[in-house]
Length: 322
Image (cartoon, one colour):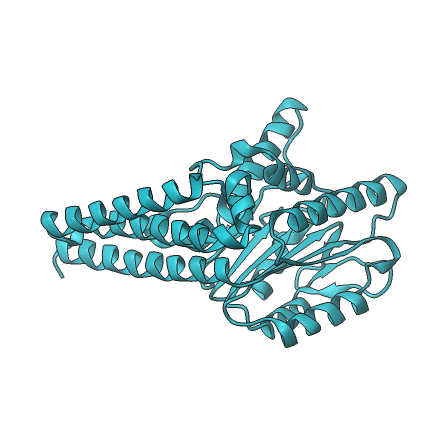
């Protein structure tokens, strides 16, 4: 096969992935997001307080961002394997394919070389058990953020097509307590995390922000980094430290609207503007898709489609600004 044919096929493949991401993004905006946050076993008062505070911060952020969101947060004595299992089972009964699902684990984890476990005040839950519960949820777009020590050991069990998996450590052998969770929460509070300035913090933007801040923490403290966050969103590859769009990495995470901020948040909570907000996201994703398709299109066709999309986007933005 000629080199140009290979390049064209790769571009076509990436365009298809982006188009799928765009479709999912619009559907998720129209549907309901489910958020579950768990602050597990602290072991010490300092950790207990820290984990609980982070979980409560996320609870407030998610509830404020979308009036249609289903938000469940477990801390202290309520954070048990039984409660988490019951909640995920209930979501499996309620969630629709067009909904989105986000699970965030805060606390300590363990890894014995074969199996990862999230630590609860009672029986722990393994990565395999978590996967079974999450696999029953019909939502096609899923995000699992495991911020615990040894969290890299859970990726193999949790990864799946249509699911983004983020872990604070690259392997199960990085067993020290992590600081990634702190910066993950900060990413949802800091407008600078919204790199493309579309007033939506994507899963990829939050990951990159938290990873960057975590690395800076160890550099400032002049300490050897004991955690290296990774992401996997293809469902079939090893988790990576930095995504490569040419390999399809990060495309799903980049289209996953984790939290809306500013006017986008207000629009999401305003029934009169919600449809316009959804249309804006659809057009932005369409423009991104066209950019990847450019090399496989005629210059005339690309210019025509891009101009039309940009014009439509300007009209929608004008309506949102009224």
